[in-house]
Image (tube, rainbow, N blue to C red):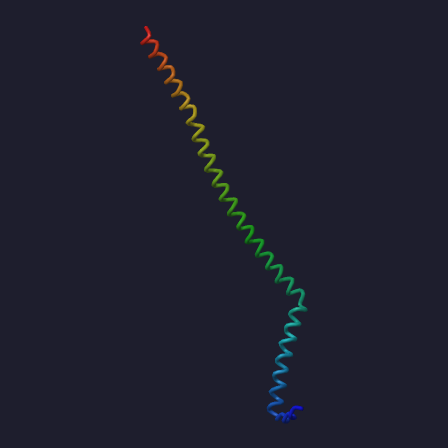
Length: 107
């Protein structure tokens, strides 16, 4: 058997009441926050909106980067295409010159 507890003094009782009120107030605030569906929905909506905006910005940057890469590749291909006829003409001129030189030496 345990020894009986000494009765609480008036200040101790008041302190216990104050602590109980504080805990009860915190519990009520937590329950009110959970019950406020509208506020929770607004918060979730804001979160989803922020994520979507971040994703949109990320995709925009990726698209711009890809467009820059493609543009550079197109410019490079156009440069190669412009040089191709010049190279073909030079090769043709070299072949004709070789034939003419060969004929001269033959005669």
